Image (tube, rainbow, N blue to C red; front, side):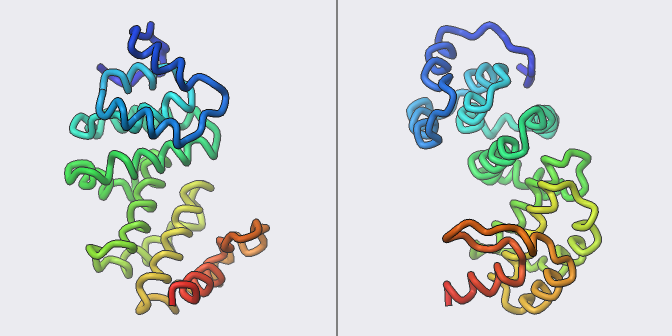
Length: 219
């Protein structure tokens, strides 16, 4: 069964699940509880995805079978994520990476090929993945190559890809001290988000401040 934006007639099982999450703003934690009860159900996930609605699609991502996630399938899925607004597609992408793509070597191998993908969603996922690798004990020794690529591409990137690239620069600077000065200089040169208002108790997305703030906190 392929991914499809065309709403299909839901099965009785899908209708029952859909009824639980069709309210305007269900809590994300509730979606995760429902997914924990369902566990893995790829066919149900595809039915929920076919509704085209945001919350059913979030739940669908949680219950997909990662073993069935081919490049062709992900191309279609991420193309349909673009139907949503900026914030929604970012969370859909985040959940797809965190709950599916990072869970299997096969899908990780796909993610690692997406640096220059035509899809901005795939490119955003690529940089999100690289940024989060900095937090792990298995962080690869690829920071220099990443920074070289970022310096060439960040200026012309789409807004959500650019913000994730900026996130990657910050994470490299925070967790790889040997590259910290480079990242801070890079951040000053680009000056991305330097004037963006920062909500109370949040950290500035301006890379030099972001790096200094978090490094000071974690000691």
